[in-house]
Length: 539
Image 1 (cartoon, rainbow, N blue to C red):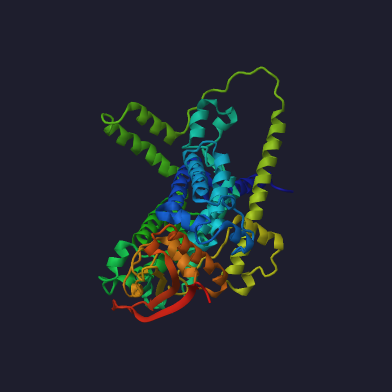
Image 2 (tube, one colour):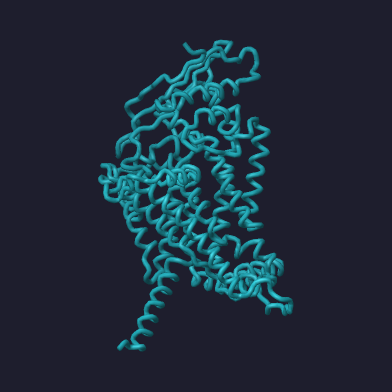
């Protein structure tokens, strides 16, 4: 005969295991999702500024720039390129479109009609990428993944205008729920971050990473160095590059353990958050990687736990109380309420007959949850299939016969999975484009810089012309991009449109000039090279 007590114990043990896994891997605090939304909104606004400031909007997203919308459609750089920006051509039109994007990002950050803004923000960001695919990078990959995947999460349930406006009027069943959301998406985000760090670490297999000189060569990338990076490389102590190089590998190999451990999560995740902030802030101080450093910091906010919020609920009101004399009481009340979530009231009495019985509503809710999880599971499978194909994994782990529809999901949503930054080695040389234009008065000018052509630029540096131009100039010399070179020619001609008679362009050449980065312990580039890429008028 079966033992009822043993069955009950087994059932209780199974329930305990499920609860343990749910709490560790499959759930997230709603306040954490609100904080993440705010951080991601700031990243989106910063990304929009990066693409549009200092003339970059005209250069990269209008028909006066390096890639017209009709040529981007006629000869797409990658398959399945769609963009609302293809409908805008002139600088004025694109300015209006970018202002619309800014409005979407601001409303997304504030959490107004959050689910709608999540969809619109995703469309806006992918549209910006697809309008000029020369500018996509690891940061755009991470941002797109986060935008698409978190469409399945309630980012506006806390710390948002939506939750503030709902307040006590929330439905009674919502008020009774714990402030957590349970979904497979939560585990998927952990797995994704573990792969980002783990594969970036595993792919750094070249001699510069083994010998400790990788960071030295990264500091000599003129196209991306910040002012601090440019100064540091000339005052680099011998121990600095090995320390930062091996420290990078330790962090990237160790991060997956902190991300996925189901035990004693509070402090490992606090350590992980601090490490991510320090690691990516350090990168941003030395070299520009576009959105990457900042979106990874935003990613880290997903590890703020309920215990962390308990600490904040105790500490923040004290800080506000200490500043009470200087701050309006309404502000103190608002911040405290946002941390704790909207207040709840007893459910109102309603004698009207319900359109559905509770059991029916429960079945409908379960069906909606099941559909949501199934759709996301499909996107996750497509992402992991892509990851297995484009990264150097063992053959047994590669999905060699991936169904075509899974590839289409990746292409249309731009959820690429290439994780090999500065791998297997960082570039050992650097270079840039030089335009040598002969003007009507016989003088020579580089219209891109507005100064005399500087053929010795690779021997000095940094260039300080921004991440977008660094990406574009890195791809421009590639032979497979030869068809797009004439866009830069037209951009140069547009820059000089309306010049005085003596300053009009008669002819010009475009060169790629570069040099090998100095070896460790040296500060002088070597191996100068110069390649002619384009002439106007052409032969």
